[in-house]
Image (cartoon, rainbow, N blue to C red; front, side, top):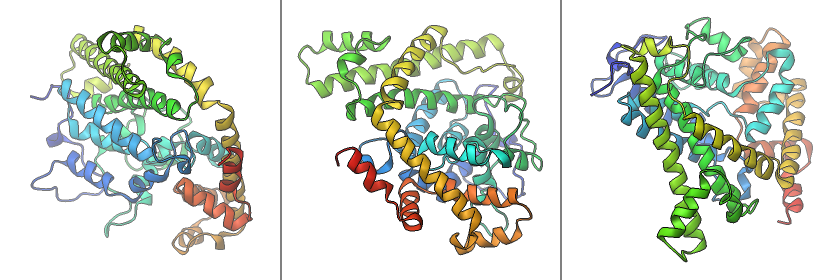
Length: 391
């Protein structure tokens, strides 16, 4: 039975463009399915998390990360008696706006777009699902429900001023109430994101040999996880030992969110989803103790993984790719694909043109961005980075 504060698909606020609803799928189920079938969702297969797409088949991509986030989100939503379909839809869509090369690419695009309103991946996700996905006969975008759009826009909390242009543009037509918190379902998706990357970045860092299992076994929470495995399975194979410990770590994060969030929601006693939005604070969260320990782990990852010398060197290389491509397309729009040049013809200012170029570049996969850069500049970053790494 759904909690009184769960989002009810039967009373959903509707879509920007009215359409007949399905006889056998709820509005939130249709949103989820439209996201899964979107071109932008498929492209996540070749977009990076931390490591560039070509560096190995076993590292996470934005696609595998999004699937893992959705799995965690459904589990937590079910435990809290929330709407799992809405939670899953937001979780699957939360990274759609990421450009190639992860946060490195986002930082480069934001710098280039500073004179034109900046670049933000959450806002870009809204632009994708409301405009850039152009497959339907009657409208641009996926025509998602208000609840799903709200969740994508502000799953991390109210949107601060200045509102990124990509979000402000849509919000002017379809008010997503950016100053309030999102539904409990969207808040679950946000915490599921934290859980997924906190766990899988440890896996990927070990696989890349950026740190050792022994170093992880000295960190908060993980120390107890490894001790429990060693006690239960003395002499366990190295790979199985670390997997068992990280599996326990993952479980601790999920259980903590469920227990703490259930208590917070019970204490507030909201009678509707709207009351969760107006609570003035996130209702889905970690305990203060676990959050403190997670900050220690993230500090470790920051220094040993995100700022590892090889990763920093790669970041510099791919940042230059974005910095080279942007002015090339701005100065010669004939380099853009034919379907994009129609939008260019409708642009009435440099800012309008810059936003089209940013849309195009942000939609690229790691692989395509590197290929286009090599084709247009004659400089093969992919080869250089393999040489740097001894590949």
